[in-house]
Image (cartoon, rainbow over all chains, first blue to last red; front, side, top):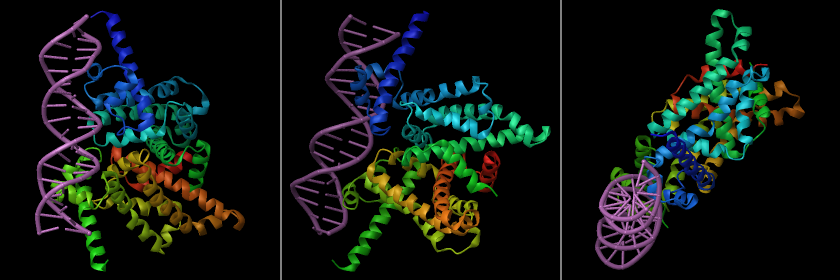
Amino acid sequence: MPRVTDAYRRARRDEIASAALRCLRRNGVSGTSIADVVAESGLSAGAIYSHFRNKAELAAYIAGSMMTWRIEEFEESADPALATPAGGMRYLLGVFEQPDVAPEVVLQFWGEATNDPDLHAVMAGVIGRMRTAFAAAIRPWALERAGAADAEALAGRTASVMVALCQGYIANAALFGLRPVDDYLADAAAALDA
Amino acid sequence: MPRVTDAYRRARRDEIASAALRCLRRNGVSGTSIADVVAESGLSAGAIYSHFRNKAELAAYIAGSMMTWRIEEFEESADPALATPAGGMRYLLGVFEQPDVAPEVVLQFWGEATNDPDLHAVMAGVIGRMRTAFAAAIRPWALERAGAADAEALAGRTASVMVALCQGYIANAALFGLRPVDDYLADAAAALDA
DNA sequence: ACCTGAACACCGTTCAAGT
DNA sequence: ACCTGAACACCGTTCAAGT
């Protein structure tokens, strides 16, 4: 199969996915029908089904591409501001300053993922990569807090809880609106400080 | 209208709601159809629609009753262990030790609520009540940390972040399984500790 | 008033037929 | 190979008719 065809297929999939994402932002995951995506993309139902096996696979494709670029940026950055748990979370949650990444859609995908094994696998992959990137970034921080023998374990546990704290921010923002990330982290620190 | 009828109606609504909740736990919110609830409850479609205006109202009824009893218990308790942010969150999240309250269903309701104004109003009511209960419980804690003039504001900000931290635990648990609440809180404290 | 169940409009998905 | 759009099975909701 010639390379042109692969690029064409990918472009077509992204064209469908971005039309679908516009629908999702307007009407939500359960509120957008394939008919909506047909209207928004200008293609036919059959065309969409020749690029995605079903609605769930289309959702998984969108979910997989929505935050990945931010995680990649994080992995490639050498900014020392990202080497602390608060710094890493602040950077990652900054993705919601982008107009096309909405916490509402992310929260809906999480809900769906608890019922859809394929979507769950995609989300687990994205979030797992995020966790790994966090753990790598805070390794120096962990070394400073724990002995060399325990630093790896501390970085791992801390990266896991960073994921959960980001989820809390996202779920809260989706339901009650975005707040400054720094306020969230500062108030949380004060609340948990023994 | 005689009082018996009201009690009968309420009992019937709860009967339908608990049949629906069994379906939700099995197949999720988007995965359960009215036909499923019909089969599980032994009633007809028309009977369900004579007690709930539509599927969304049934969902809102379930969402509203799922955690409310735990919040009421919290409000009525005078246990000093609940007077600290960690203690309050530990108690509230303990609700998931109950077999019929699943974080997966809660997370799905949140996702739906970002698209359904009625469900959003119900969730905002439940979560708002939780926030108020948290704020009241930690007032002595806040007084100890801030002057009398600032204690109210600190309690309010802290109660808000407690809600978000609980949401993080729930979203994480729904996707990756329940962990001990104490581990979550301890790891979060270590991560955020400046 | 509560309930039944057939009927309707809509949605996800398929597939024979086109290019 | 990609695409069209009519067709099918299923789902939420309604409503005339029963008790």
